[in-house]
Every structure is written in structure tokens, then in C-alpha cells.
Image 1 (cartoon, helix red, strand yellow):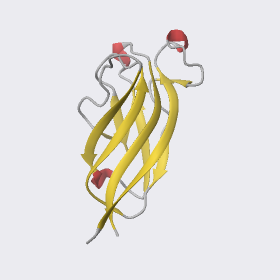
Image 2: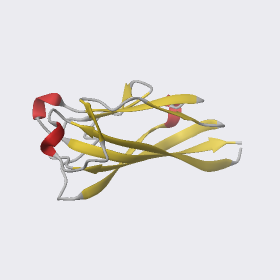
Image 3: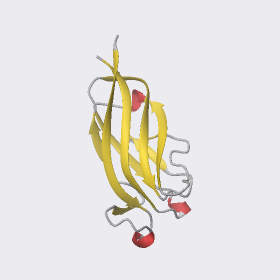
Length: 128
């Protein structure tokens, strides 16, 4: 069985937090504690491991969650940054991927952290 790689890019462009004015990024929509669920489709049958890349600004605390189809990818999904824009990679089992999927990022409100999510890239391998 031949495998091929595929991916999708999801524009999130949302500011998570409790104060609109905390970050000076006016083009990011303020949404509170969780991003608006983003839908994405895939073709084929995902196999093995997949990964995603998250582009974010202002992450200062641990404990935020990345959900695909409601499944928490667990672990430290977003890490505190060294300043500016950062990109994180998270490896996960592709069995949670379906033909129709949702992505959502949930802020740990107890930390008081405000941050922006710009793009998420999801990459998987699939059989023909």
C-alpha cells in the first residue's frame, strides 16, 4: 500500500484572553477563552502519526489545549515563548482524523494569559 502526504492550512486569526486591550494586534478577532471551531476536510485514509504546527504570539504560560474533533492532544501543546511570533509542533495519532474535522484551541483561563493564534497547519499521511 502506497502512502502519500497531505496537509491543510487553517487561518485562525484570533485573540484569546480576558482583555481585548492586552495585545496590540488589532487585526486578530478577540474571542475570549476558545477559538471559534474551524472545520477542515481530508481525503483518503490517514495512517500512522500526524502533526500540526501552530503559529502564535504572546503565549506566556503552559496549560492551553489543542482539540481535534473534541480530542485533547494532551501534553504541553503551546509552550511559553521567548518573545515575538513562535511556531510549535505537536505530533499525534492520525486515527482521530475523519473526513470532516474540527480544530479548536482552548485557553487555560486560570493562567491569565492573552495570546493570538494566526495559522495552524495539519499534516498527515494517507493511503491511496
